Length: 190
Image 1 (tube, rainbow, N blue to C red):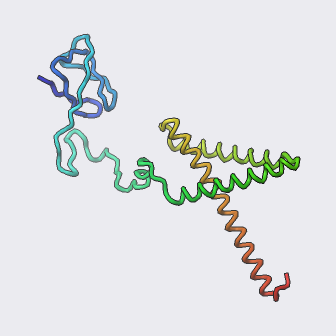
Image 2: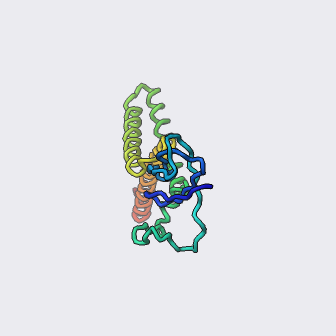
Image 3: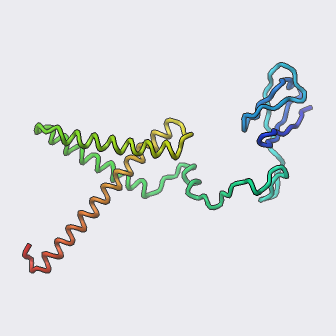
């Protein structure tokens, strides 16, 4: 017959098969070492048994509610953990991609005319943005996998550049509108 034990670290209910004779067991949830009450020196797997269903909002008596975090108001982090990306991030990333494409196209045109410095300026600024995004991603998500980190770095770099491109475009439009209004106020004498 199976034996039920509780992990002393995370209070997870574990189901030990009758033939489990290992001296020390490892909790599959928190990786804590648990002494086996029926142990010998041979290893055996541990099966996890889900606790019985409880009423919504009730806690097991071993966990006081005062130590649990309040996740009700953590909606933004919940969306991030699901992988949802907001429409503004996508829009800024597209603007960033267009800005990089425009800058690289202009740099390659200048390179064809014998000028190397525009390409060097664009490449160095791109490296600064990538470095800034890399530092920000590693500080906010230190435990993510490498693939996820690379995706976050690319998205962060594109959206940061997109924000800069958007600000420049908006300021350019504002200057154009102000100059247009000044010209109209002076009777079209600019």
